[in-house]
Image (cartoon, rainbow, N blue to C red):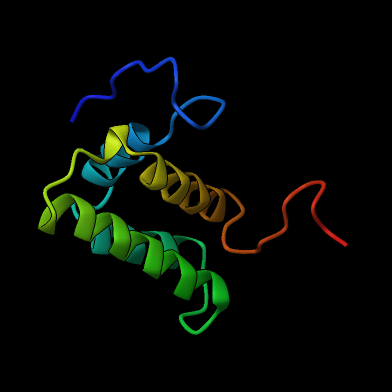
Length: 102
């Protein structure tokens, strides 16, 4: 995979997908391994919304990369999935995001 610079990429900010792909490779080896490692490290309850949603995002990434053989680093929809997966991990599954709490 190689993230191509695109002037018309539909999302602002730094792209996350390549970072996430490298992180999965270096910290778990597989998408399922990354999911398990993250949940155990942060004591995320298996039946929590965060765990279930993270599992779905990781499944989508796994299917895109391993089954569909996509270079997800240049696909906007996978960038959205990568960013929300990263956000879930950064908030350790708590969903407490500064500025978004009620």
